[in-house]
Length: 168
Image (cartoon, rainbow, N blue to C red; front, side):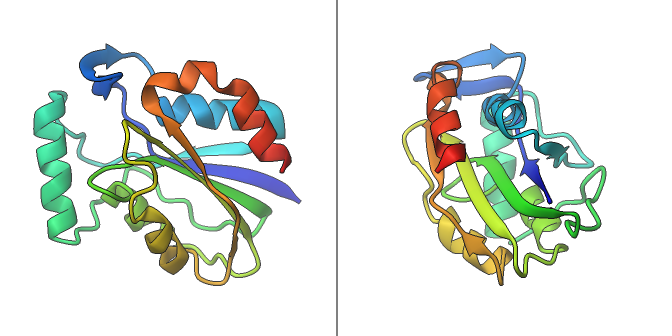
């Protein structure tokens, strides 16, 4: 069987290494592409139907309001099935302690029974937060393996770490 990376990532203005910077590629997407390189995994990027504000502070304000409302924002494209995969990597930035709400929109629609899930998170100091508890609910029936937590400012320096984690 094959593997798949389901991920959310945001480029543009981001909190990066203690300051706001514009980045061309989101931190989580960098890690997703490492996984694809090492594991041959297919990639599926979860994208909101309505883009988040380009301004970082406005973006996190919207994200916090979505979380407080337990919203399920519409996404551009929905992955209908993961039947062809046995290993699912799930990647996201830590937004207010957990996954961005568009990830809930996508993951709730999938059947994870019998799958192996390997989560990874990019962050600026908060690690997984409560996202592992949320993933256990979202991925009911899956075997959830040890996750990989990467500070966003370090994504270009952790290729060997990602390879070692994949091989565990």
